[in-house]
Length: 371
Image (tube, rainbow, N blue to C red; front, side):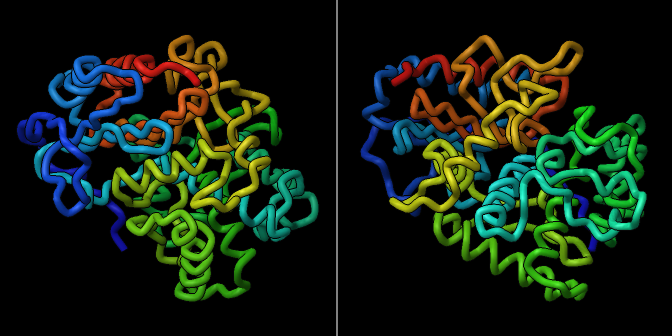
């Protein structure tokens, strides 16, 4: 199946001006929403921080912005042509959802965090890849020769896996790569790594190699353990031709459901009054990996990265405890536990526009007091 995703033509003018009103139902909401109670932030402050995200061309095109404070939506805005029911692509925000699914399987005893990753392709005696642990995959420290971006783009493993020779069985493509470094010795951000995790989870659910059986097994697990408990009714994942979840890049959901996933992590794995995911696992995801303080267990952290590494968030601005699910072209789920804050921004932003977007999001975060 062709997995090329068309991001769409350029957006028209931003949607209607913000209105002060009682929160409308999802069916009534057509333009923008700003709560009367914005939790200590004035209307003028909130508007001044939100407007540039939609109106400043130097930040790219924002399609959806949603702010939750203490579990309540206090601001919600969409560009023309988009709304509360629009499913938008996750890109790499999917990696954090994949990590949550891995955590559920670890809690079930299906997988072991510190054990060698159960990948059949690495099981031959003497294969050095057999030493790669599940934790190292989650920390992007497998040592595998994965190239995330290339120049030209088709030189990257990501493009080769998703759209070219590897598209028929993406996990097999990723797992076939040799080691470029000793496992646990080098950080290498990689969508291919997340595909390996998806394959590991699928093999833990079914021994079948039938693509339909594999897809059904994962969908049943995903629906029963995450989608239904959290109420993420719009979450729609994609699968490759071998029935493997595209856990590194291709999921779709509404801004509200992305926000609910962020709230789930902010609440340490609790949703709807139930502990769905172990708080200990969420803490693992939110803890700096040994090689990069700015990266945890498939989550980005608001901490300085090693010298020479490009900043993913904005360390020094906002709380150091802030973390995020990030995706290509400026997809963000920003979560600040000490502020009780979750912010979702979805849109299309180039690499050159990213610094301005990050700065604007940092300014928005800094409006809100802690506690």
